[in-house]
Length: 518
Image (spheres, rainbow, N blue to C red):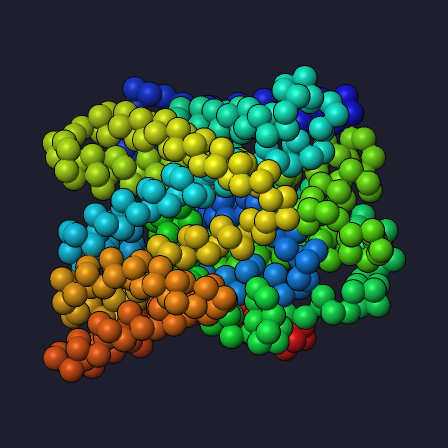
């Protein structure tokens, strides 16, 4: 246990050092702080983007869901590929051509000031509260589950202990992001991606060896080895995959937190290759996150877990020796920190550029914008800790509560509208700005109404209906009034022929994956 703790402490020292190295407050411009002066190459974009995408909630919450529902949970990982490809070949070329720092600025150009402001505010609230708070909770939850006996000195009450750990993790990641900006986020993300993969590969290898090999997944858990589930599946019936793919247009197509690296790319080639490589890495993420949860079902056999979210910690505690535990936990912390620091940075970008400079101080200098961005990080820390406490309370009130699916459903109240926005901004550019704004607001109310009218409807199916409904609500009058929109084929922008083939290979691999694991 002492060796594990030493390894973990070393990790924190190294990451903090990486975060603050090359810091120079006197020379930091807003462009450098928020977009690293558009110097990122494809490896940094690929590794940092996926590192941001994967947080501790994936390893804990999604592994727990895989323990319950099986390979179908991998759809959340691999189906992201479609959204990534559309982002790479359609959305990112438009953003780079528009020379924007935030997605809000693109929405302002296409859909007007009201829509852009609403998007910025909703993004700040969604990520500053829900995403940040949940990510911090999962990190603290994992530490407590694995080291419970050794950290009782922090506090005798587990709920209080988890919240204290949450504060420590939040302050640590906020500090190096505050000091280093985008450079700190990318440097630490690349290191943390390597740690995350090493830890994940070790655990999935050990879990499969304990189970008896890959073939034993089909022998002992055959009902859990399918990507597509029947209509009566409690969480992921096959029609829900359509809603998932639509929502990926938001997550990968107009998400400041995810796309900030691509916006900071040296050029369109590096942005596209970085995203496509990230798409291939999603298969690796599915392997190291989903398979251990399924393997645990076969390993435990007739000893089911009381809390499915303890699946990943249980594997670490029961299967790994001292030393390896520390390495795996470094990977777990890496997944947490890489997401949290990115949320801090992107929230501060939205706050400083879209709110502060736009509405509060239009004449703000670079130093004033950087200073306000740093204040935004402190604000996000406070809101994130508040929501982390709420999540902790909910989890302790009901240990069997499916937090991952609740998190997804809660976020979709806003994300449904974001999918609608990006479709209007790119494919329906002649639509009425006033109609788009009111429909965006109405999409939230429509989600609440449909939840009330059909509380048992699967949340992804609900999102599918709402997204299609609000798009048609604007598309029909737009097409009737202005005719068919622009030639959509012209929207496809491929930097080189090789990049096009590379993207095609990624798409073909997704289709093959769905056929093989049907």
